[in-house]
Length: 264
Ligand code: URA
Image (cartoon, rainbow, N blue to C red; front, side):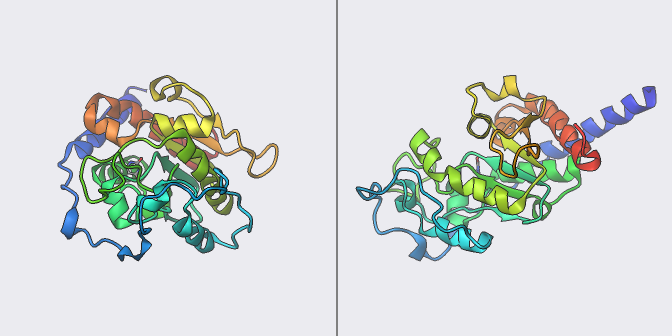
């Protein structure tokens, strides 16, 4: 018992040290190779009159590529008109676990990939140190696929991020469920309060909700086959408050044990 405790303490210390190591300043501006500007809509206009606020999946996509094309073409809310690139998702389509954040920021908008800024580097480190996984072993996506900006006229400006509105969230939500249907993960990890509230349909902050697993309330695979949901802190919260690293470590240990044993 003493030995197990000592080993756990060593693990935790190694994890905290690894997360403390400097994160490289992510490349930005000209250093990031932005995707061709053709993906940018002509102007940041609101959705055309008469279009439904919530997109209907009229055609079930044959695969993720066609869903990604739908997302690229989506103009169901204002975000689709302002963003540089749609940020669909990244990773393995056979992943057992899907990590879900809130929405793309500046770096993600430029690269067209989720979690590529400082939060993303921290997420990569957590995956590696606690789970022994790379981002290509899991799947990473967001609640909204386009960058919510305070000023949609200036997508090149830093400090222009804002949380998605309830309308933007409900417009984008069907895409995530389609991604989950295609991947069929055993587990979703919600990163932060926004993703947790949206996916669990609750109105409690992450600090009260984390520490245990839930059943995903949407029955994507029929009754009796729930996807498990493990809520944890958003990596950006760990950057602001390093004291949260320990709780995140515990949540990731729970995930590791679930991935190894199928039990929670
Ligand atoms: N924060 C998020 O919630 N998602 C990203 O992709 C990047 C930062």
